[in-house]
Image 1: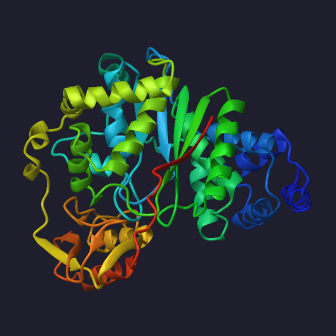
Image 2: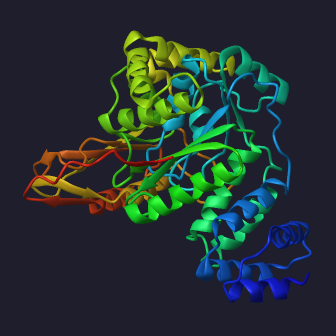
Image 3: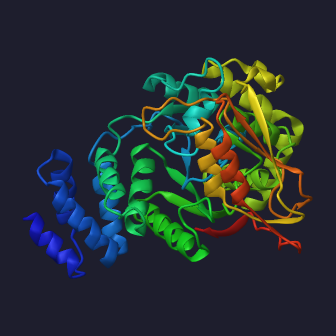
Length: 433
């Protein structure tokens, strides 16, 4: 085979075979296929697309490019979840203890964030002593004993995807459904999941800005899972504004605790319980979603959910005192109140802009090796639908930096107002299964 012939083939809209896709991915991973040829192929895929079989074969080629986590020693159906990303998304912190509480094993491989705030690993490391560098035997032992564990992703899981993603980022080919879907699903499959629940975000703070785009991506990923014998469900959830009231790392941990004690924001609670309920159904704990959701609500009310979170922190080496004394979490020295510029209702919030503001305050990374300030972030005092008067506090910035004017200006411009009350936001738009 010659790479130039395969580029030509895809340029003409002709389907690539499994062997051809395997040849391309193996060649690029080893360095035999140069960047300029892979960039040309990515652009051809961007314009010509791929069918279901091609996307499944691309996913499998990514999986086979590196290590695969063998979790067969874990008893039961191992369920994982993945979010396509958003602002204030701390759902993983909530679902791990919730799902584990009903006996469904959650063996979570997670990463660090690059952008608005830290990833799940960064958020948890805001807890003093919390260790995510678990050796494989301890990771498996924790899941078998406690039904939950989290660890940082192996450097050699899906190396082809990592290399190709970096190229997509600089060749304007990131927003391609076949390329996004194969990238996401390859990491979940390589991580050893038996069943996968996907949280596909849609709105101003998400990659998918429209319901139609989100549904296309969700359907594609569910089809990949089905073709590779993984039970897969996708839930399309709102990201037209930040999820919950907190953005940052330590303060997102605090908000996760609020949900697990029944005191959380309505949108975050609804999304987290929905994702967790679907995970418990595919994990075999409940026969249907409605019963699962109801029982998980009861677990929260009973106090068992927060006790499971406490156990989660302890088994990973963290100090659980902060659960009942949240001031033990990292605290910023500066707290700046951002005021409303107008009277009226909050009609829209640019979630992506809020995320950028959080990063400027120190909550996220601009470059991979940047340090995160766990105490930095924002508290959303008012969200879409709230009535405000000029001069009311709409948001509070938390930072250790002395210069915060740019972040404050971004937050002010992110808020839009109207004279009439906007329609209520749907937290869950669709479920694809």
